[in-house]
Image (cartoon, rainbow, N blue to C red):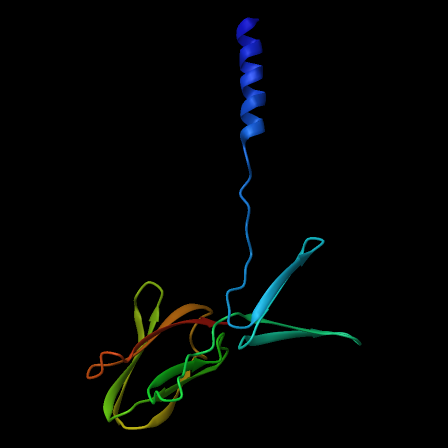
Length: 162
């Protein structure tokens, strides 16, 4: 009887000390915020790629993926951008470089299998390169854009195919 009372007391004390995991939702962005009301959660950011819009007579809600805008400094002439993300049919890769160089574009599965590789030769200013996603199954992919001659030109993007 004494052992049962001790076990019951230990069980009540142990269950009183157990705490559930709490998910803290926060938006980290140059412009955006979040709010939670009555079990609903809403967050927004500037530069968000959208893919679905719901509307009624009074309001419109556009859903999408929250990703930061590419940082392009006015003095910097070198950048890489890939959009739209998520992609349905065609992904556009924009590349701008300071001096002529060969740019390599690789599309990889998340397991590391190379699905596509293109080498753009003697790019000396700005180019927009389209990648056809029509025959690629839905999922997450990695896009790597780099230059062998410019060590600062190595970009990796996570691309979602819908």
